[in-house]
Image (cartoon, rainbow, N blue to C red; front, top):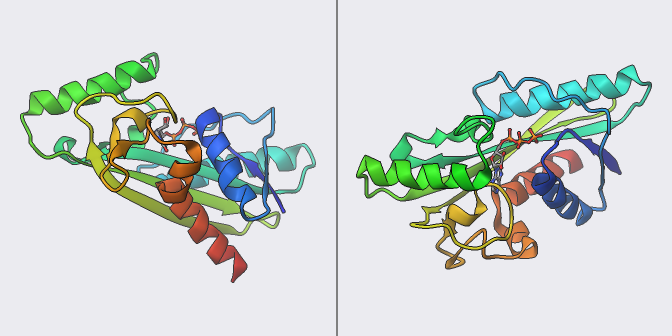
Length: 196
Ligand code: ITT
């Protein structure tokens, strides 16, 4: 089986390739994929917007294929679950990832809250060649670290502390993260749904 992935995020793509390859699924990309605006206020809604956009763009070039899209985000309890679905845009479109991570740590410190709960959420939308849609979600609970730790992973990984690993996602290998992450759980659920 092969799936076209509707993503421009190389960190996600690497993880999706690894996670799906364990199920014998190859992940392909479409070089002309034009990202749609993510206008929904849920992860599932935005994943569906991205998957439908790629599905339509492939169809317009005569390619019939299954597609997958991932919408994910980091929710910080002390910030009322922000940035959430706006995780990719937090701090503005020109902020670097180091700036986004530093802003979150600063905002929580300035809030005076002692609540460090954080969670990663991932929604996957799969659309088959006939246009049938399936949605699967995965969540990982953890904590906002007190400072940035580790350089592995991507995005918010260095400030997401997983107590069961005694480490941030910036300090564990892709292989380790792929056993426990929100994305790994969503892929497992999706594959279960597709097998049925
Ligand atoms: P695509 O829409 O092209 O897939 P994106 O970066 O815009 O890529 P999202 O809209 O899903 O992706 O935004 C979620 C952001 O949250 C994203 O930019 C990531 O950097 C961050 N994020 C999601 N999953 C993450 C993970 O496993 N580790 C660290 N950060 C993550």
